[in-house]
Image (cartoon, rainbow, N blue to C red):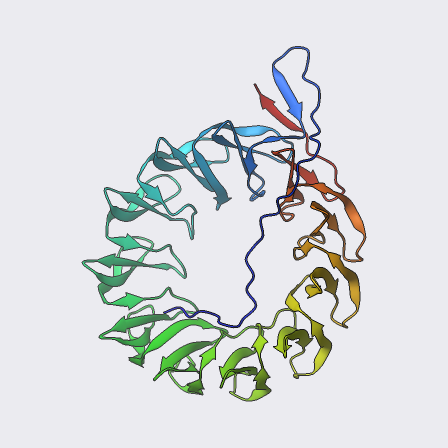
Length: 417
């Protein structure tokens, strides 16, 4: 069902690790009970829903934004909170805790999806998948060979090597009869039977006949379909709005889709009009009204009219985020705005996109943060960093992790010995 975005912008997150530096640790209190420090954890995750998972001495717990350990470190692993619940592992079994630290779902499952979606989470028991709600009740018994999380009120499940759909009560709305399926998106799901793909609605009616060699999910009212090795787009009535003539296509983003023909990339709108002819060697989807394009090994940006508003002079370019995009020149990274002005010169060894108004940058093996004017508001002194999330960013010094706010002030971490 899925397609690889060959030739597209897709660079994995880097491990921001460099040399060790000084750790700031506060003095122990004289009563020898509480320990206050700025960096103390062996590993951490970002803040999500007001709490962050932290690891020390091989045990995971959670802290709040005051630095208080609100869920004791006793778990072998922990995942982020979602919908008020977090998946935890203890002695090889999985369960869920709420924000009061109560184990709402006991650690008894072989596996768990790790997050709640639409009020339910997948769990595995004796090799079979089911779903629990936020009270711990098995709404869907663990009887399926495989299951995927809920989306659009439906989850797809496999039984005896066939796929079907259940609703959030566990009722099999669509029997397990398909060879392969995709999740519901915009009210439609792709299904495969006898090597052909089509689409069904939530009643199970085959709205778009099974005649395609491949299909994806709907995005902005259209879905990619493949026929005889060529990609096109259909609407929800099954009409081929864009004929299957392209060698490759990406989903619509901001009203435009990137397509490839004869080894060159361009863009079409939802009527099928080639707004940007297939002439580029590489391209990415539109983000914030701009798309990165490459020709003769140089990257720039175009707007939705196809005009090259930022000249192709960079060795690489990434998507716009919060009004700025990372560009690479001669091995150094900086940021440009939508007029092409280099707000941040290409002088950093590495950089990450802006989050909550700040971006992590690296120079001489140290990480810090800049604002959108390019000013280094948080000095480069950290070995590793995470992006800002809910007003705080995780930072690492001397092999230990802590959190800072957007002024660079450390979160005082309070924990029991």
